Length: 117
Image: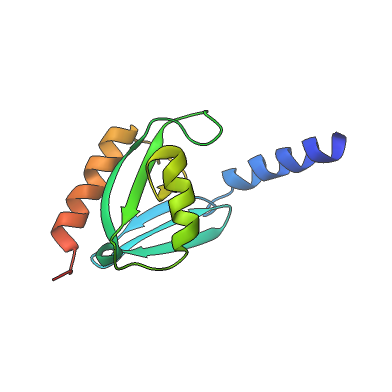
């Protein structure tokens, strides 16, 4: 138990380090980062954003998003996640905003910069 608790404490401290967690939006997509692990998503791959009422651990609400039907990466995993909370993926934090505000902002950027035909 001490080892598991120590690992949890280390993971929590890691999130507090500068650059460990961020959300960057640009004209081609967005990048979110958790524990120094960045994930890049293109606007053209996203169908829309919304609020996930509670995450898998039922701790807090966050922003979820679904991919366009033509996006085929990890289709089985995405369907499994969607069956649990209604969204194929989620942004791992709220970045100082309320989930509904962040989802609205993400949808505005999606509409503005999406290059799908």
